[in-house]
Image 1 (cartoon, rainbow, N blue to C red):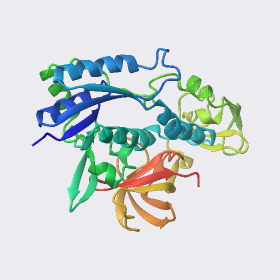
Image 2 (cartoon, rainbow, N blue to C red; image 1 turned 60 degrees about the vertical axis):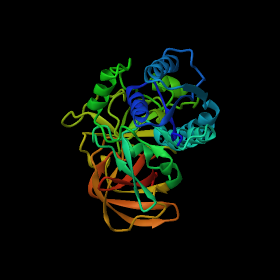
Image 3 (cartoon, rainbow, N blue to C red; image 1 turned 180 degrees about the horizontal axis):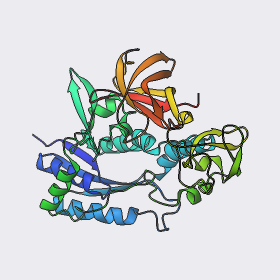
Image 4 (cartoon, rainbow, N blue to C red; image 1 turned 180 degrees about the vertical axis):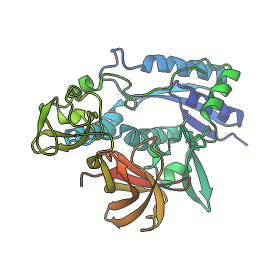
Length: 360
């Protein structure tokens, strides 16, 4: 009987490396795949793809598996980056990792892997999959501090049925220990941050290459002028740093936070104090919905939701589900709910799906 073939996305990081190692130990026919998805300025100091490929190749050599490099730059630009820019132009704050997973890692990558004769793909995400009566559930990773199910909520049944998450049951410390014990050269490599596949770089400078900025006024809700902003696209709800008005004090001298963007008048609205009422919302509307099971959750049942990654689960109810939109009401008002970000709904450890937070 031939071994099942699994193609695993290898980024050069420790998580995908250990995932590949575990698959090999479990007896799969493992092929590593390094994805290069960004080329526009790959010669500058912020894009680490060359070093990442070297790291992935070194790991593949230690494990004893082949590694293929594939370029999905055109797909990334068309399916992910174009929408990323559209959202910023509209004053929203998109989450490229969510789009990148749905369109590249579990679509373009999956299609390529199937073409290589694979039964499954695998990644180093901290998440888990459970099959019940032929239906697949997406579960939180065992390590609550690393759980990445928030970024995976747009996956569907077909994608989940073909996916393995080999390290989803492990804690990060155990992943690093496995890497060290098996001589993987990147066992202590720092986790990557920054925009998915684009890397860490000065964000304003990067965004300004693609979207023209229009400076305007910074005001309080009552219209008091506090200063100038460099372009609404550079700011997000709840932002404190980089406003350029830190020296302006009022009342008890608390710091300023972005509470809203007036796109029509090109005005950035700020309030003083982390707990200002304007920073809290008791409910939100979500659009572009994805329910993993293919079925909508029940209205008025008690669920939990995250409106940003690493946020504690917030008890909520889905008050209304319409044509690709829903309203979610929270037991306690939520801080800095940000249009363009994703709201992801859970029932205990099961990720049900979610949508994109709308402006309304």
